Image 1 (cartoon, helix red, strand yellow):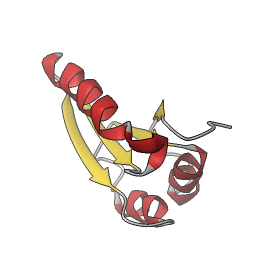
Image 2 (image 1 turned 180 degrees about the vertical axis):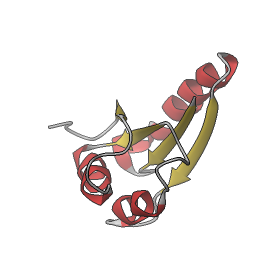
Image 3 (image 1 turned 30 degrees about the vertical axis):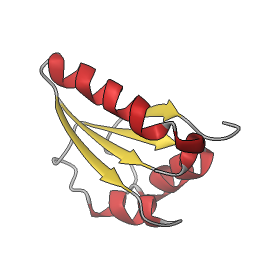
Image 4 (image 1 turned 90 degrees about the vertical axis):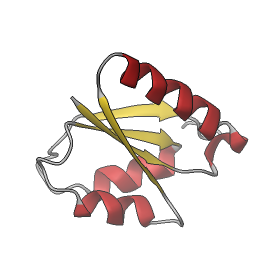
Length: 94
């Protein structure tokens, strides 16, 4: 199983790195492949996910807040090619 994390580094008031490292370590310890993409600006998550081929990953995990999740879902081609996991580290998580 290949997990691809799309990460907003400014979400969650700096908690992202610690949380993400713990989650990815646990997955690797259980034999899963893990990759990571760190966004650089607003809109970047949607642009990135649109470049992924449907066979490149098995799951997409959003690490960020509501805005990052929205960008990823809106950037995916329909029908959504992968299940989406969420590590909610936004300020309000609305």
